[in-house]
Length: 535
Image (cartoon, rainbow, N blue to C red; front, side):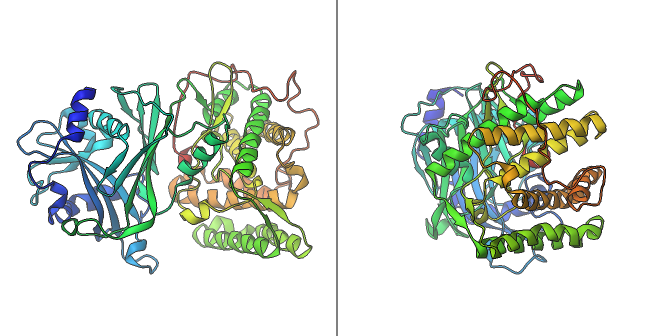
């Protein structure tokens, strides 16, 4: 679609009431959505049936004209009703963002995007499909992002100094879970948050703050869109029920073309038994830069006794819940609790720790290294999507990110070609030590100076991994269980240290602050896979 045609479509006025104003729109879609939504990888309520949906907001981005051969484009926010879960108010039900294409006959190339054909309502006889899998409609969405302003409950914003290119070919990415992303040419990538919650998403908030702090390690947002609707609403009643905070729906950032993600680089190094300490040390340096910029830009605090007790209680509760769900974890529960109790003891002894905004889900798959200069960048600041938004936006010790990255090196070694053999485990130990060394050298808190804090956060992460793998990838469960045995001090071959950074000569090289050489791995590989699949 040309820029002129797209602009006409976006600015054209309806000659009839919009489809989204029809009271029967959602009821006619519910039978289709009840089948389709639970099958999507981004659906968070698996294991419980969906009894129905409530409409939060609806907008017609491209008119649905029954007489036209061109597709229409609808935007919906819907809440999924799922009985049988924890008791909560209807407004707390999970809210999902849907882009629906509407076509008379779906082209064969879009067969994989099919949702269904409503039997009644304003879309009766038309084909409804996932518009984010249609490059043509994705291109239209980019054109809409180029036009700041309001469309119903939707608000589109462009950074003041940004100049967005038009007419770029859209390429929807596949294989994601909690979100959906679309690449436009080699210039931008749009992340669409499928699960929506009121409040500023950290994946917009933190990169914006870092960009304004001139931190070059994180691609800065160039455009985004939000919703002010809190719903549920009746479209015929007009706008109402506005949330105190907008719902972040999507963020457009520069696409780092040709960059390789850290997870694949690590696996490439493992496959040829190559050293990774230079890359790991440089990644530690990049992580420290990001943490320093966040601490200088956003509020910080000191964690004292009550804070540490609250953190330890939360960790213990997550451990107990995971042990109830995963029997293999139960024999280690008491020893793992000791790591959390140590935080309470530190608080009683008067220890305090700095807390700030952090990444919240840092691992190798959330990092990219440029093909040319081998410079590391950090992406995807959403945090763990399963956690409440308020928790993801809270201040935390920066070493939580460090502990999570150490777990990622362990994952790579145990899931890579060596399958966790002695060489791979030594590779992981050296990479972990090099990362911590680089982090401390670049101004981050030396992880060796806070062993109790590191041990608690690495234990908490391993417990999270055990529960995740048991639910989604049972074949991978031995990976976090090996960490559980080490952290519980029951495997003499793995040691008891939380992060094992006692390597005296790790990462020796001409410039400890320089980013690693790009030949470690394949710099042509580019991937924006989801956190859940790139641990």
